[in-house]
Image 1 (cartoon, rainbow, N blue to C red):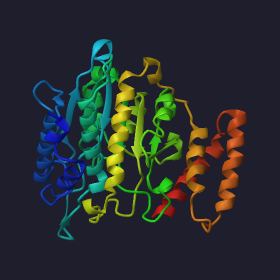
Image 2: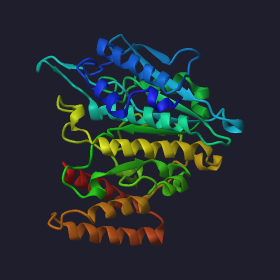
Image 3: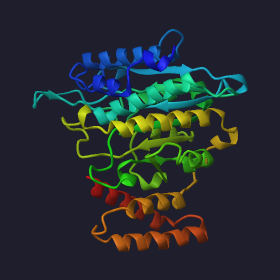
Length: 365
């Protein structure tokens, strides 16, 4: 029997998690508990095994406000000499809960129900047809306590995981974090903008060949490799970065529904989401068998050439009437020449990449 048919579709997962029944999934609430139970059921239906013996739950006691949270972890066993190594794929499942003033709730469809649906279904695709070779185990994680008031604090679920599971942390060759992955970049933009997403952090390890190989693996999906300094720091990946552990962070960035009552399931781009499921299933497949040397962490690694390529391809398909477009493209060409001569941009020029990313955010908003 096809295990994928046993579980809910990506659309069903997202709609459930973003529904009034889950009431915004604020850590410690009844709606959060319903979301937790639902995610565990989906893992079971997809054949993803509990990571903690018979349990999928890592309790998070004594969070800020004396709340108890819970990380959710399952795994797909590897094979052969690599089975005790892991590729982790993660999406936080908590959100902001109720808005008492507006008598409503924060659905959190893009943040982060969509990414939860993507990683569950991608893991399901991998499990249904794994590589018949030595391969790493796949650790499927939905961390808790990513949102305020826990954000950027020791109480974050990812921080608790790293501190209490040092042996597991050291066995994770690469962590893939997904956040804000459910929307297209704009509504009437060119396909090469709308169907793009950013891949950040690959420059800190050696997985470039894997990412390059997958660049055109799924039609109408455009993974845009960016250096970590070109994107404002945000999300669970920071815990791995601070510990010198290899990671990549996938995001489509914030849209204008971010952290509002209007981040609802019907506003998402489901054709894009379904293509992302395929992309990440292929990524898991290739990472599970990749050479060990691809996963050594290089703190000073940079990817300005890849960042400029990604930015150039997006600016080139913008409306010709976009303000300063010619100047922007001219700057990118000059920056590419600097990279060709020096390998990467000097620090003052690297800061301009962040500005170019902000211009793209403005264009698609």
